[in-house]
Image (cartoon, rainbow, N blue to C red):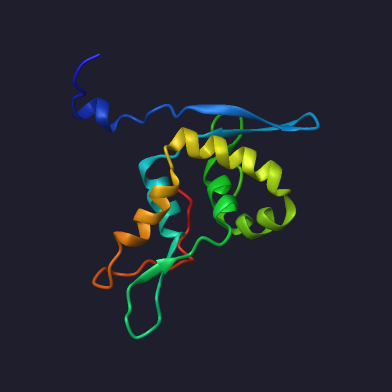
Length: 138
């Protein structure tokens, strides 16, 4: 392997995916996110702070479901959920099963607890706010 040229860098990469056993004979596939998908996912984790100080704050509500929406796919790697599904998924699936998906998604996409903290710390009141309703679709 050597240095990638422009053509290689701009060629769509085959994203890794893994089968996640959810128990009771059920399973899903979870895949890596593209850079754009990761950015959009991270945008859903912050919201503009409406107090006098401005800035941003964490919006970790439905974090697990939001991550599942961005990573659960079919056998071909096509996402099968939409951002609108996050709230319903969060309320419908057991925490234990959702955690199995999230654990694998975090591992594949190198998302740590520190990453969640950095998202808010690296945001400042001088930046243009992203709406929490931004789509996490690619």
